[in-house]
Image 1 (tube, rainbow, N blue to C red):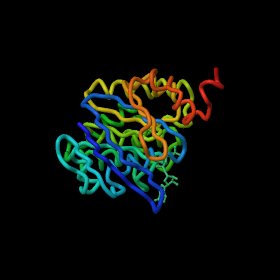
Image 2 (tube, helix red, strand yellow):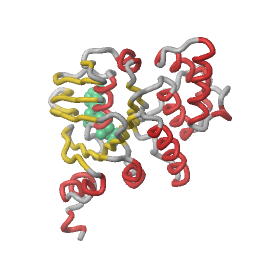
Image 3 (cartoon, helix red, strand yellow):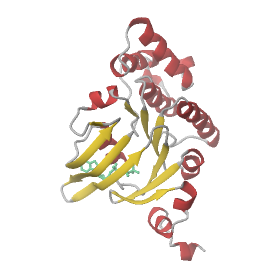
Length: 241
Ligand SMILES: Nc1ncnc2c1ncn2[C@@H]1O[C@H](COP(=O)(O)OP(=O)(O)OP(=O)(O)O)[C@@H](O)[C@H]1O
């Protein structure tokens, strides 16, 4: 569904996405971990189009989208959330979801309203339906990010640390929601520092360091790799043992 070929993005001498080649299949759930500043969010921004790639190619559902603007990628079915929530100021929860259903999913009239309300219900924000996004708590703003992405009717969701700051109970609730989204056929790529939550959900895990993919595979096997211990956790596996 998504193919990245030798994708690169640099800020001056700093390569934040470095020769990234990656394929993600339809219906797959992929986790991304890596140290702070490894380039995880930058990778999402290059895939979703907020940041232009310097070189390489991005193919989504068979089409080359490397030079397409973000709104076209969104319409093609690439939904994303932002690590720092970016609510539409001055809009209620319902209005924000409605914008996503109208301009992302391409719906209008009653269909857009129904789809927006459905997205709000699926993420548990129905009780805040007519409240301004600016009045939501951090947890609910994160849910709002998911709601808005979902209301664009994505084929693939890029989730950037939507679990950060959540309690264990809230993480379980979030994973229940994500399971339902996955079961509806949406591919999910999830950047998350809460590794146990991530590995309990994803089929596959990649580790990024200095913009490069340093491991890719079954989550348990990836987490057991010595280089992952060393780079991600700052612990040499031999020392840890
Ligand atoms: N617009 C920019 N201009 C210059 N440097 C940038 C820009 N955006 C990001 N960076 C730098 O690129 C590097 C990668 O940042 P990025 O946010 O992608 O990392 P990350 O892996 O998502 O980190 P975190 O886990 O802390 O969210 C960092 O060193 C960051 O300071």
